[in-house]
Length: 318
Length: 277
Image (cartoon, rainbow over all chains, first blue to last red; front, side, top):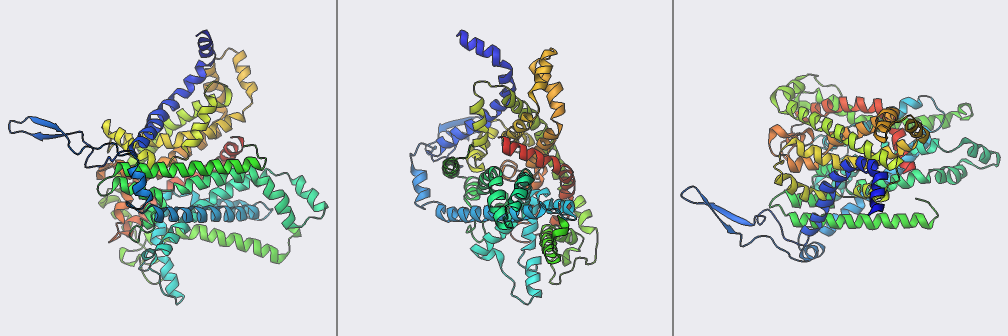
């Protein structure tokens, strides 16, 4: 007890400073998380959410009776329904999510690294290039999403107009699964490259010039310098941005929701947008949406843990 | 260095960068150009940047739609999110940076892990909490939800920033008789202005650009934020690009100016947060 009091006396101001955050996170993250997990074991939806059904009587009063079909515990039914494909299109959405995340992160990182390396040289107009290349980042993501939807518009959007001018057939972008998904990937790559570029440029600038000079004196060619100095020097930054990028892209809601909106017929939905639609469109199926949420979260946790383990095995202190 | 590069190399370098710049700018310029075209010419098979330019789309957007209302709503939500978000993440970030209190590690992990939470798992329970509190279809519900999204990341970023401010300053302030709160408020915060600026922009932009919570929580036209309102311009059939394009431009200009002005700080802040974490 005295230890507790001593501890309080020593740390009360630190605790006071984290209390606002802790309370908000507790009420709006921890509690919803626990409740969300609980919901996955129930069949709560819009039509059975009331515990009582009240009807107006003639006198103006109300009589309430327990709802005979009120929501209840159903065990693992939601998980079974989703994973067996009985409800929703889990495996289709899962494939989409993997394709979407892998291609976006690869392209973000590849293009971002390429541009960062170019910008890290002495060259004229460097500042200008840098500012102009950041422009896509400066635009609110939903505006970019709408803009790309506009460019890919089927009747005479810019992309199709260019194809026609070149004598090619215009493409019905949103009529087929893979073309539709690729419009969203293109939009997202366009939006996300500047962040990678800037983060990696910061990393590049922290690598000491001495290393490059020493390597040059030892006769290393540019490729060897890139492999043996640049890439290892970038490791701490790359590892962080790749992990963050993967998580962000996996959960990226607005691009898919606004660019393809699942067209054609839900074929390009990813897990996050699919879950959102289960929860808020048609008869709202809250429990099913929560189950998707738990599945998504577990996948990300497994991924992050595996990623960390790989890093640790390679001797990274992170 | 530059003198050692041969002419073809130089051309290749600048050519690549120019191409990248063109790709970065073209969509924006095209939307800008389209916003000045008459509605009937916006989707034309001829590719023209300038086509019977007119301000019609802008005047109609501002007078005949709810756009001004949505803009105001978005500003309100973003400003309040910014104020609360910065306050909470600064105090938490400082505590995590300076004090080794029980629960510190746990809190830092929690912040990192909440980054992983998909909107899908939280949105339903938060929706039920909000409706229990009678907050559905209010802007307040959005401010609260956005703080939970922005604060963990910002606290983490600011912790990294506070770590770069020498601890000697805290000790000197303590010797001068300042308590921990006064030290934080009068010594550290003024020094952390660049870091705070980054946090402000980040929270502002998070709120400014969010779509999922807005779509789920808002129900009536007069409460929509831009992220939701704009969707009503482009339903699956009969898309009104003549409203969408000028709206996109009007939303982008202030956000982009603020962003480009702040981006140097943003980069520094991100790097500090990313490497010192």
